[in-house]
Image 1 (cartoon, rainbow, N blue to C red):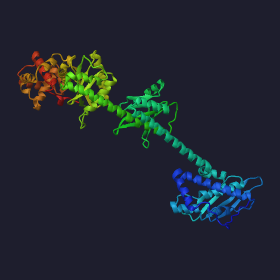
Image 2: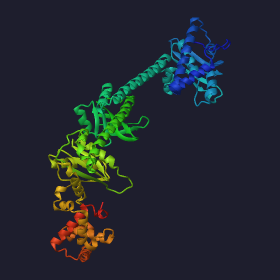
Image 3: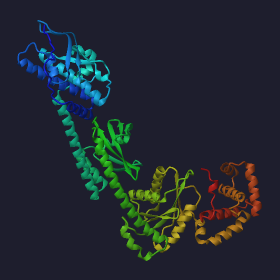
Image 4: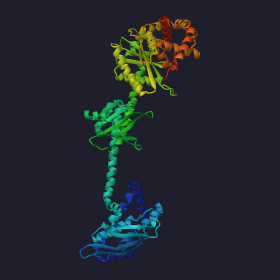
Length: 602
């Protein structure tokens, strides 16, 4: 049986001042957290305890005084210990009711002074010292655990001593924390973490520097993503908000098919790092927004295939690519808009008939050969549903210009009033061109869901002296109320020629003679009758179709027709008279002198 005596008769020797210990503990709290600090202080105390026991046993003082050792290092004033630690003849160690108290624990005193009342026991270094000293002496792991502490308001600091294996069922987590590592490993781990963090920061700084350098060298977005991929070896895809690819690199053909067939779904949004995590079938995606003028312009994504994990630091590199991409896109946007302004100025000269003879000097600003045959277009942008938002015609022009560029269409655009004018050159196959432009406007409708577009095209011409005529033809075609996206002036036949060849005065005089009292478009009742007449004639005077379109009864239609015939002093049963009246109404609409927009159903 081994007997443990405690003696506090010798003077204490303090290894570090109270302030030094407080500074150590405070810095540990700030750098590794309160939880790891408990383990660190326990292992620190354990090292002290083992070293103290080792020196004591080297002096062959078998009846050593553990209390003397403990109080000498300045941790406590005294130790009160009860119970026995027994070494049986077979070498087995047994703890019998081994409990004790620490008198005036400096750990508890400093915690109360500097941190206030604790919500748990705080004498971790004392526990470590006792555990280390007794473990060294008895050759088996003994652990002291405090269950009362003056720092949390208890009357004394009280501990219990057991073999480590006897604690496991009750205090497994705490034992694991205490025994997890030694002090040196804890410091090495912290150093390694700091070193890794430093290396990551250096890599990020070098990474951003290289990408920024490429922006200053006015390299393209593709060249920037190429440089990023060479450093990171992670597939990269940048898309605009319309899901169009702006740049991509690092994908195999098979991987491209996978991401095209299987759209990734959002797993979660990391607001702290401004990234989103997606998961697809066989791949992961990490996405960051590309912000321009405080708006989401595009997204930049990393892709991970074959069960590859997302590194915790990848968001830092993705964030840098997104930032540099925004700078590159902003530069490319500014460059594109400057080119567009130069192209628009060419068309504006034609519209305003300014220095047409010198217009060839502007051809150098065009990325395609600008040569006849030509035709002109006028585009109207209207809202599907009325709201207070203003239609940004300039933005619409830029969108159209980009889509035309992507389709290699030799067009230039300019704003003309509230519409957009276009001039197309090298017109070899107008029908094929129509198919292309309709596809472009379908994309525009998809992007701008509340807008509807109407395009009127002129006839073909070869000399800019005919531009004014072509513009009038395009406007006339645009105004034709056939509810189609595209109307070609050449399809209007005689109706187009009437509008083009008659002056406005002549057209209005003809309309007054034909429509008589109904030629008062500001009088709601008369305009309603005129609209009824227009629909009735468009439907070839068929009552059922007219009734369905106007949502009126047959009797209501017949009553209105009778009123109209009385007003016009004619009979609509006369086919030539009816055809002539329809021609006059359509001519007024094409000349933009009459509109039935208020009657159209959305």
